[in-house]
Image 1 (cartoon, rainbow, N blue to C red):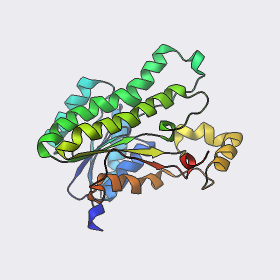
Image 2 (cartoon, rainbow, N blue to C red; image 1 turned 120 degrees about the horizontal axis):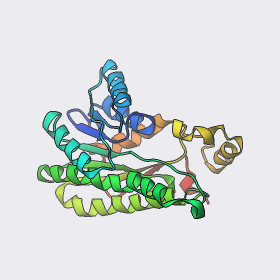
Image 3 (cartoon, helix red, strand yellow; image 1 turned 90 degrees about the horizontal axis):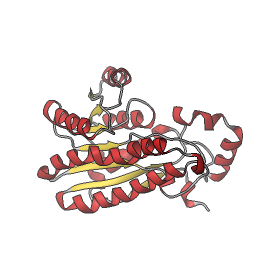
Image 4 (cartoon, rainbow, N blue to C red; image 1 turned 90 degrees about the vertical axis):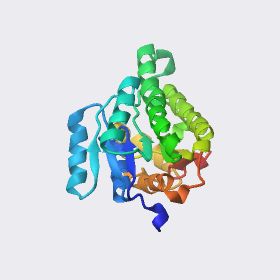
Amino acid sequence: MDAFKLDGRIALVTGSSAGIGEALARGLAQAGAEVVINGRRREPVDKVVQSLLEAGLKAHAAPFDVTDPNAAAAAVEDIETHVGPIDILVNNAGIQRRESLEAFDEATWRELMSTNLDSVFYVSKPVANRMIPRQRGSIINICSVQSELGRPSIAPYAASKGGLKMLTKGMAIDWGQHGIRVNGLGPGYFATELNAALIADEKFSSWLCDRTPLGRWGNVEELVGAAVFLASDAASFVTGHVLYVDGGVTARL
């Protein structure tokens, strides 16, 4: 269906030099978008860009720190000037820190909130200020099942993702009048490098597979269809929604 095609559109995906972000960027590119790869370090960013170019896809590098509002604003201006207008923004950059809440130190709290929540505001604001005159755009914030559910030792992470869910709704309300759609994509438990320790933990994996109605870990490629849908005209009347791709975890008590 043509409504799902992203031909002629430019997509900035933050935190896309590995893992879920890389898979989403590749999927958007395969759907026709020209993607801008982001990460803090140039070498892994350039590696992903080269891989996409070798696959016949359109890609550009934009290494910058999403937790620095000045760097984010400058990067958005540079992309708009040298690549073109950003039609799609995927706020994917995020980190996880595990520790019991009473032992969680303030510096780590600030690092986690800055990356998982503040950065979405820092990148989205300059992008939205360029989308507003054009009266169009799609922003996708990568939330989590922890936007809805808690787990031991990750209370700060859950707080950041719960906050991101509500920021997503607020962005949708404020910017809908300008033709900008803002939605969330909420991954469940996926087999990524970030989750390598959990995957290797037989007790946890057994619990997770039992807890998940589909009975397994997700593969990052299984997030792509939802991202393409939310980015495309097929979702032209969808905004303020968080789409969970979690094997049914959030459906189960």
